[in-house]
Length: 408
Image 1 (cartoon, rainbow, N blue to C red):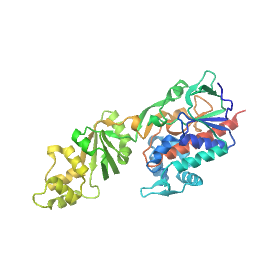
Image 2 (spheres, helix red, strand yellow):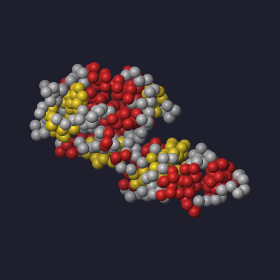
Image 3 (cartoon, rainbow, N blue to C red):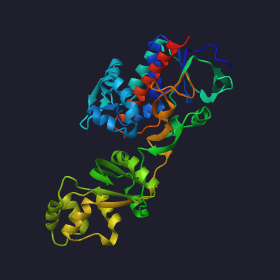
């Protein structure tokens, strides 16, 4: 059946990109309906809020855009048009004051997503945006209508324009599963294969180490892979390592392992101390102290750090102060792979920019625009994911507004 209230613009996807598109469109005087596959809106947004809702980052724009790698070109103008300052002003317009943390990351004072999402949905509802949940988009029919599978049966919609904001392929239980790729491929849009990013890495821990230390944090360490070093934290998992420092390196690790290169992570357990200073401290200590006690007393190494040293070196763990210092500054962790899409924070791949014009409209399907993580870009955690999602949602909506104005 056809939707009896066909909107000017259909927005498919109720995450940050889709909701930002809806807000921009309704502000231009267009009727808008948001179609969402899940029973509620913004599920991944709420999940992000469990970690404090890192909205964006305060670093200089040149460094900020560098976080998007190869996608910094096509995303440059989009993010400049809705930059971190604009995103903060938008949040504060919803009554959510923001602040810059010690790391330069930007958070709402509430440190969670639910107050912002409630205020946002209230504003959209008051503006006249309609919401249809449990509407799973299955593509276009032979006449070009949008087709949705719903609990009440198939629904078809023929809007004047469409904004797709269907997300990537990570954390599928929260709504984004990449199933839209088939419909876009049939339409002739170029796609890049999905791959996990901002995910954990796999290591062959011994059963004893995994059982004892799974869930233990490695705090204030330096993590090195190849030529890149990240200061931060990691978390031991039964399958390997995860956490912010690991996520920052995960894209490079994934690409290296995909080429067959050896994946070895090096962990500096005391990045603020020089090898000579470590060795000098280890010379002291009481006669008869065990190695573990020396490391704990002299260097304040935690149980998991000592366990990691023993896991990495086994019987070859040096006993001399100089040798121990070298080991502490570069603990080797051979990597065997990366965690999959089901547990990745975000995904790489998706709709290639070459299949879009400057307004984020599909070249293969005029009147259809795309935004958010369904586009082929990736970035580390730290506010970059949400910033690009908001900005591309706004840009796609602006593109739809301009395109509609050109139509007879």
